[in-house]
Amino acid sequence: MDCIFCKIANKEINAEIISEDDKFVVFKDINPKAPVHLLIIPKAHIGPINTLDDKDRETITGIIFKAKEMAEKVGVSESGYRLIFNIGKDAGMEVNHLHLHLLASKQLEF
Ligand code: 5GP
Ligand code: ZN
Image 1 (cartoon, rainbow, N blue to C red):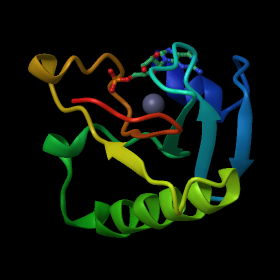
Image 2: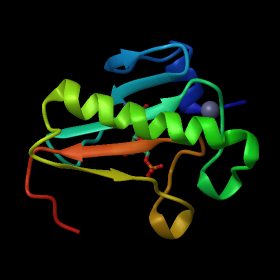
Image 3: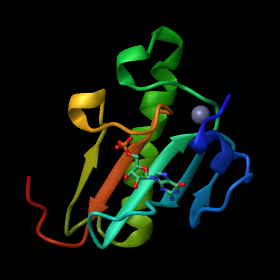
């Protein structure tokens, strides 16, 4: 499968990885929209939110807790941050591998 985030998870292409465990990889977005812009992905390929089913519940819980942990790690837990899942073309979703954006470190505007 030709999935860029699978390739990042498998180290086939480079990314600025800031954290990794057995289930998730966290790396810097190549085109940051804020001073802190991280992407949190499951290592196993899962599609976007609108394709989830029951077996993905643990992954979704895990990705949110990973975001909380990352916010603490990069020091924005108190100052604040935004978590975003883009779903589908009207949201501008580009990559078809589940990913959670963590944006922080400026006054975020909608
Ligand atoms: P989406 O719009 O699908 O929610 O977000 C995909 C994000 O992945 C975009 O913010 C884009 O900048 C980022 N991105 C796409 N390709 C790469 C890549 O090869 N490396 C990294 N680090 N980020 C990428
Ligand atoms: Zn993938």
